[in-house]
Length: 265
Ligand code: SF4
Image 1 (cartoon, rainbow, N blue to C red):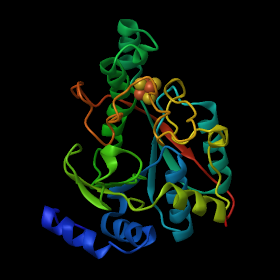
Image 2 (tube, protein in one colour):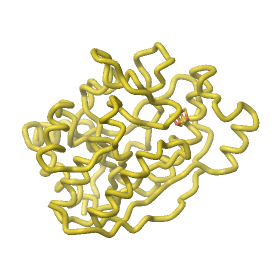
Image 3 (cartoon, protein in one colour):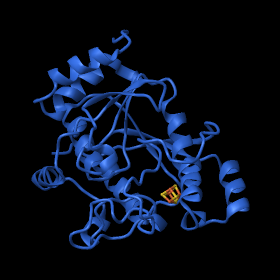
Image 4 (spheres, helix red, strand yellow):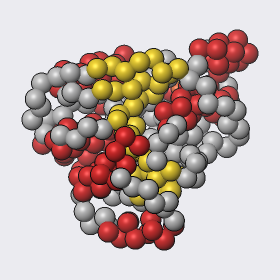
């Protein structure tokens, strides 16, 4: 089990080691190194579905968590049901603290995010960032589906990073060097289920009121918070929001969904 603390130079070495290897090798290294102190964060997007499939094929026990903001589209919950029937993972579900949500809605209204970037970032902090901080408690590393080509803010993402937003734990991005096309090729090749909204023009899916389909030629993340003009649109999970201080770590773990399913492919 890994006990070393990771310096920038050690992380450089590891990135060199995994530079030309596929996701499976990095996932195996992470699971061997950290055991119960590493977890996959999945929002059941295409990248998350690819990583779930890799982990399922590796037949390794791994912690998986998701953040249920309370504003997800029904199609995302439908996909979780499908995963339920395919794989046998136990998924930890973290939700925002109801008191935090009540206070925010009472003060700013239910759809505050349309009013300003600051209010949108407040909503993301209450519904996503604080639950993430809860989910990461006690972890030494987490696994994400970040890819360099997703956004400007992710263009420098490495396969292994020190996460200075989250107590300097390690962040593993096994798909950092994959293109969107590679993700979809993998999904098609292995008949992996995906969110039905993708067939209706959605390329990146978050909460229902903050996501729309993209038009031809638009950026992959153009449908997220589409009313904002700044290209650096982030919810705060992977990049610090511009104006909202982190005020606490309130959240509710609403219980693990035991996902018991068939033997897969
Ligand atoms: S994506 Fe929209 S609804 Fe979801 S947490 Fe952020 S602002 Fe709130």
